[in-house]
Image 1: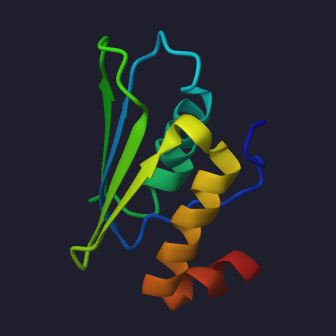
Image 2 (image 1 turned 135 degrees about the vertical axis):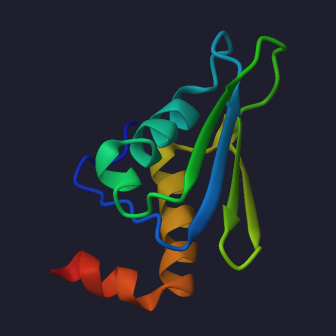
Length: 108
């Protein structure tokens, strides 16, 4: 199931996002959808210094999203058993906790 298109992704508290997946596996859809959300121009405009790095492998590896925040904390999500909505929800809850102003911006 696709993530809601109305979701606003704010990368203000994020330093780097690495999205790693094998495109030939059947369980990568949610990881690719998450990459599409955080890699969009609208999301990237919220933090031009944030690196979004897609790593495409052909080794039947598990889809993984590795997020590094500006304070050094890391979040590792294994996308094989998560939906893109669940991944986005976990990501945004951490971002809002690190940057309370991001929540204020979403309400406008």
